[in-house]
Image 1 (cartoon, helix red, strand yellow):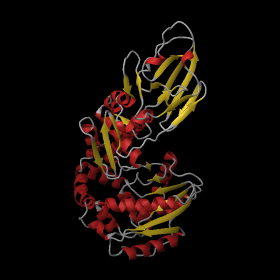
Image 2 (tube, one colour):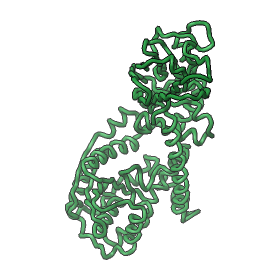
Image 3 (cartoon, one colour):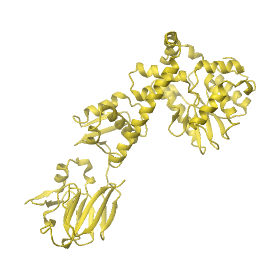
Image 4 (cartoon, helix red, strand yellow):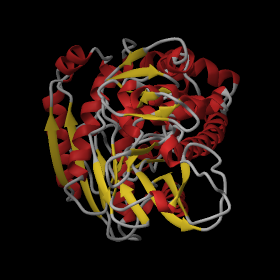
Amino acid sequence: MSGVQIPPPLYLLMKKLYPLFLKYIKRLKLIDNNETIIMALSGGKDSVTLTHLLKKLQENINFQLIAAYFNHQIRKDSKKEEHWIENFCKSLNIKLLKAKEDVISYKLKNKLNLEHAASILRYRFFNKVSSKYKNSKIATAHTKSDLFETFLIKLLRGSGNQGLSAIFTKKGNNIIRPLLIFSKEDIISFLKRNKIQYYEDYTNKQNEFIRNKIRNTIIPHIKEIEPNIENQIFKTITIIQQENEYFTDLAKQILKENLILEKILPLNIISIYNPAIKRHIIREYIRILKGNLLNIDFNHIENIINTSSISSGISIPGLNLKFHKAYIFPDDIFIPDYKYIINSAGTVRIKDIKKIIKIEQTEDYIKPENNNEILVPYSYMKFPLLIRNAKKPDKYIKINSSFNQKVFEMIRESGIPYELRNLCPVLLNYNEKIIWCYGSPISDSFKIKNKNRGKFLKITILKDN
């Protein structure tokens, strides 16, 4: 620690760092006018530097700056650090919001490593602060050196591209990292040149944690071989991030077009893609179901891909999935009963299963291409029609058949598992006689006997986007 009293900021001495900082902010549009920036302040070299740069940036961009400090209560000097932070913010006239939690208890309860537990609680606090302000962003003080350290940690743990590129300049809509273009050496030089003090975490020199071991023992040796390694890795990570962004957007689009009720994933959708795309699809699918990827690693993704065709299900952190008849879905899936009256030709939305039933009158006979649509003689039909979910007693004789078959059996034959049978609506005539079960052949009672005479009703069931 190098003292608790901070001298007034000497912005005239920022000639080297600030122009690059300002250019980076403007080029990537990290901060705009009328925003509130929540500065994640720890008191260390990086966050103190970022605070001074953001304070200077207010001369060029009109935004509100608020400091947020989270006391992990891990170190013996945590109260002293908090007091230092208070004095630092007071000296710069910056509003300070604080919080503290027992990180060690949270770590043990959730079976996490200490760094991960601390990160979860810290960001939970930052997001809580951010939610109180309109047009707010959280600014963290990650540097190019942090990027390199994280890259090595993930590499040692066997991470894929997603893990190797974990630190982004922008994360979601509300997290920014404006210092990623600077190294630790840049930061230290800036602080020395401006005679700016900071609070030093004594544990940074201890090698109990993997990050410290890498920072204090491995990286110095790497830099002896390649002094410019941080810039080289920065380029590599930028390439990986751009490729990840592309594949993630592609996976999101695939899920948007094919996911049923935002929960049910047809396996044939992912089977056509190579393993790289499959991993992105499954990762985004988990994110949709859970809301996050907390504790989800590469092995979880691989297990889902590799066992979905031979297993009945799998449990991953925070989620139980079932594999059944070429579908993946949560084991607690519930599709409610539904019932809709159709009084005339037109379009009706079956909101419960996100389907649209479209009924059109036509004089042209066009043979249906599949069991997602039917053509029936107009003279056989009488409104109101009824569309509802299948029920246990339901049965009818399929076209060109001679015996009554249960609708549940038809649904099973079509490849829909028992838990999802309500996805297949049943269409009934005014007298509640079954015309058709979606995905199965039409009732023999409603088949067309003369293709060249009369009017027809074309009935189609479509996905409602």
